[in-house]
Length: 118
Image 1 (spheres, helix red, strand yellow):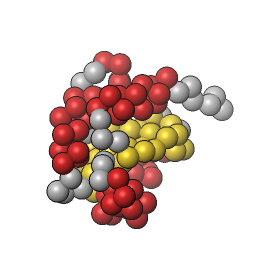
Image 2: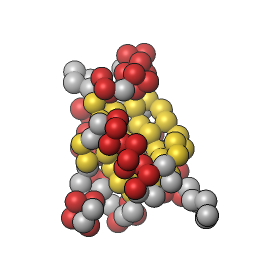
Image 3: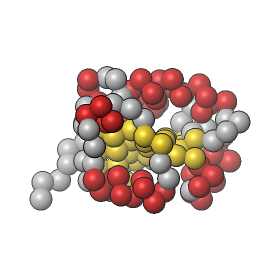
Image 4: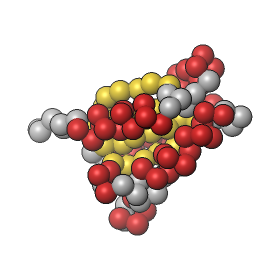
């Protein structure tokens, strides 16, 4: 993937997400849905995360929660976008979040996460 392509949110599906989490050291995913007010409110900050120099090396992806049973269930229960952090192909953290500060905190933890050398 070129540096230019890396500097944008990538729309993907579950199958591609599995591939991307293994191809990139760190991935920050947002599962979203139509008619979700919190999803709409958090869309602009999520798009801007890729522009932050601190986030170089993190791939940002967006998925439709209706395509993922776990994310769909979480969104129905909490009516919020579902955010997932991956490092080295492994899930590090996941939660349904409604406030930008909570999303930033999860992203900060992903950024600080030390990969396993191997």
